[in-house]
Length: 529
Image (tube, rainbow, N blue to C red; front, side, top):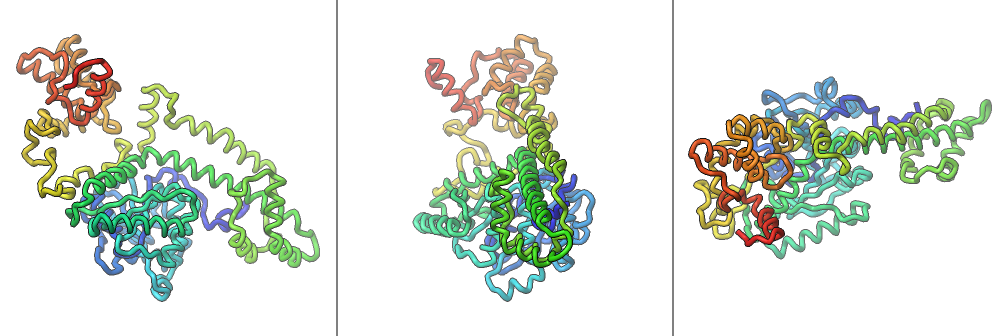
């Protein structure tokens, strides 16, 4: 009614966009490793993949989960009833011919959608040949993305004009932006320190934000590191990034509510501005002259509206862009301000949105309510988490001595190693049965875990002792390690007739839980294990 889609170049939100999976968009200059990063994340090749040192990716590619490998033309994607890309039709056939979908069966893509963008160029002539407005398309995806990853090459830190323009359209979405300093294994420690500082300086000049951008440093593909000086740093950085990606489905509902609130506030402010402009227009003579006066006086009009309706300055549109839009329309066609519509927007902000927020997890929730809410927020993911790569260290993060870490030895760790776990083989064998029980967020609920133990046929007192020993972190839920311990104890009683120990032997405690057990023993006054 107040032409929000015209002034903000943003079409109306549809139900499909609210129901869509979280989206991750990758942006960067050519040959920084965007496509290689996606390949590493998926653990496989995908249709339409093009990797090389030259500008190889000349189109926007959306990676979708599906039963078979195939590419989907952009025109078909934009009209698909179940995909949130209909709004891209406004960029025309020239763009849609450079837009495609890559469908591939992937556990990662069951939870998120990945968007690979063309490599950003530095030459004005090359940019002009795109045939569409690159930065506007990036802005369209940025508004809908849950995470925006800016990739930089350790050897190419210069920020071209087109990259700067792309970063500029991310204004207002800084909370979604993460930066990656890729190919950092190709330089030594001293060079890395200088390159990292130079990148932060460049980003500080480009991104108008008081906060320092989060930069992940490493080599984000499957090949072994070329320089092992910073292997531990790169491994830790990769874990942090993968953790950021893994929890996206949990955060998606909050992000969508946040975007809805921002849009409502902008619509409300726009309604006041448009209503004011309409009220200042004469009813008969001098309409064109008055329109020009209002456009030229727009800064004062913004201040008047802000004070009159007690609005926030951050909710106002960009002054210059708004003026340019006003030149192309007639004020007589604008709609007058309707108080009842403002009341509906206020009701949505003050009543409906808070009621919706109550459905999200809160620290006041009981464990059962919290689990139920978390289960309802999976956003298409069976567990609510993205199954990102976790075994890259097998061959990628080799230690300086050329060997694998003890826990990565294909024949297991020796009993002298600190990472030795007597149940490591059992964990590998029980993985499928654990997954078949339908863990939520990597955990079996108390009811599911109880039923599993009951089926062993052991007495209630025995099961109580086994539960107390297996639920090491005392949260009432079983992760894979605790499940393995419980099955080991049940088998020891059932098949070998062994008594249930009063405490777990050190070799049976999972490495991931040993620090917790040690701290508990210290607090209990027990001697360390």
